[in-house]
Length: 322
Length: 295
Image 1 (cartoon, rainbow over the protein chains, first blue to last red):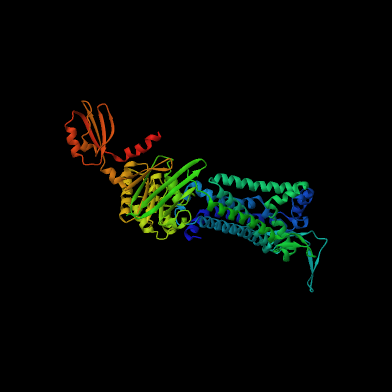
Image 2: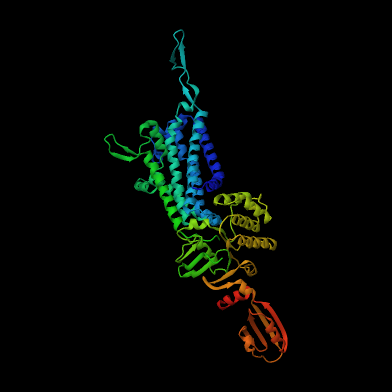
């Protein structure tokens, strides 16, 4: 990797990174505000009424959904978070080859004693580093929100027996609304495995986009193809969730490996399994991929994209700038 | 001056049935300014891009300083500094950033040298590239390229978009680089510039080297155009050996020679001359001679 080129790539990515990271940090933080404002009873009422229809689209149980950790975990599936990450990954991935080719700047860059591998590796390293930092920003926003906001709960009033100072609930008095810090309800560290899952999704999208970029000479076309593929993957996932007969479609979308809500549920309910590669039954039978297994699938697709991009970029003729 | 720095043998680049380069063979000697001439699509840029490893040749070989242009592309680019035609630079960078970036990228690059060149070219390097005119960008790229310490400079249309004064400065800098022992490949459409700075010129046509011209030979060659009022006469035998009659029709007589003109002018004075013109042959007529048959 070349230090000067690295500085240039960071400079290229800086503005977009600041926008995406800032947006996602602010969104995650504000999302905690919304969680803190909507009382659990009201939320439970709404979800309860819709659960018959909603259950097919919810990756977690109703019990988890009606917990604070479950409500916060939905943040990772919010379109702003998913698309925010995709915007950064697609924009940076597409710039790698077809962006530089389209602008004509690759001509002067590759006139220097740099190998094509160096160019693609440096660009990709900056992209992956940016994705990691954006994921941390999402987690940072959640953590900041968890430590900033409080939730309102209604508790039974108590009366204290004088002298012996024993507190006894008063069932005849109306319930008393109190504000409890969100940090007492959830642990911010429970969202770290889901953050890793978001990072893996970013790497996957960036790797595939870099591959498309290495094959192309027009950035607009790379962006169009990558965005189209991304939306198509979402539609496939929705189809698989909505129509039981099409459940097999789950094998054809990267969103099957993007399960932040399930991962948060695992982190809360069985923390010892949250970093598992595979999930096994008590008898040791393979059940499914674990959170880390899903992360590796996404990162693996991304890496295959990067390796294919490097091979194609090394072998292809570079067209003259238009 | 006679050791070949660039050796190209049978270089061919095909795109399907179309041959952008066709069995191109050339040797460029160390310390010379070598011109590449040809109309659009003749293969000049394809040749340069193949030398730099941007394009993989269909067949043939090319080497620079003994390094294979295909297999040792990075090493080749260590000894080459290349200015593309209409060089595109990073729009968000200021001129200073561009010069520093390219100076730092290349071992032996010098930001100080680049700044000095930019000053010589009267370039405002505080401006962002995105706000620069095409000419300013060209000057900036030229300064970045010429500041590199490389034995070979490849300049693809370096004076395009430049005003006449800066063109003169650029050509001066090319000559200065040659004086420092550098080799320069100079591709251009401006024949007068090529004639001014180059030692040898290859004229490309349909991907082939159609003609190789030593400029020094061209400078001593003259064309004589005479219109006679009487019937045409045969050249005396002693002059016929030194003259090449290009055209003889009716009362018109056109000859070319690189021999001293005095004996010819003496003979012409004895003829019934109506009009006479003596002019240097120039690269244009060589160029047109190569490309006219294709028209």
